Image 1 (tube, rainbow, N blue to C red):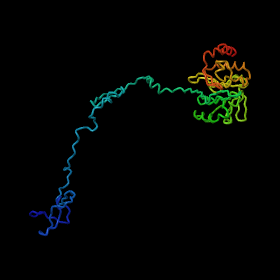
Image 2: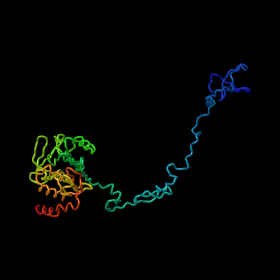
Image 3: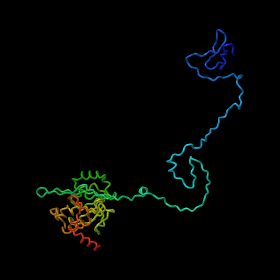
Image 4: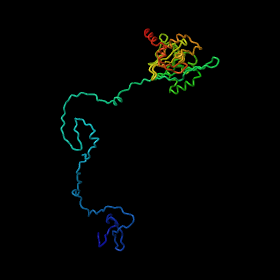
Length: 354
């Protein structure tokens, strides 16, 4: 109710005063009036709630509908980037629709006979798609080069060669050195990343202590000595009793080459990268001087048969490109070494005998 300049209110009624005013008792008028709220704390804006007698009747016609947008939310208004529009390959059986305009066309299905052809590949794709052939890895590692150094009063210091062969994971150890070479043997195998258990076969070229001093490490491994194979206490004859050589793996052959002793063995390794065919010969060829100077440093030690030794040494010179001697540095077989060995005549004799 409004009276003169004042708006009267009832303190018990909520919403009698507008926003920014509150209902308070006036002692001068003796009634409650709407007074401005001048307190520092702001009052929340509460909507004016009119009494039910003053509210207009609700009618659906009073609701104003929201106008529809003038643009279609499902239509692209931005052009496709050039790198998508120009580089995308579209099959010919489809109609390409771009943002520049919509083309309506009728697609007629045709029954055609097609021949399937393999997609063409570039050289790079062939490299990545072709299964590579297994790599052939044949290596020879001289763990200890042999030597023979004369000392006083007819004495000498003898070091036997120790050689490791790896034919695509098949490991063969040729000679084991002297008992004093144990530390050298173990350290050299460790550098090659090979353990004693990984050795598949041990070949002993002949019997002196400088060549077979650490055989106790290989008690459960096949050990080839002359024409026999030893595994622990078990001894088995091999085909070397009837044949001149035995094939251990695709690239490793063991040959009977008596001469220095009656039981000499030599090992031929074929297709060694950068070396061709290598021969590990023990004391059959103690060092290069036997070939270059025709001087045998092992004469004083004793030779079983010098003529047979020379014959078998010439045979290996003709078959190998590199020689690993028993007491010298590895050396390459030079052309004049083959000429001295009579390789043309010797190989012709072997071919005619075969």
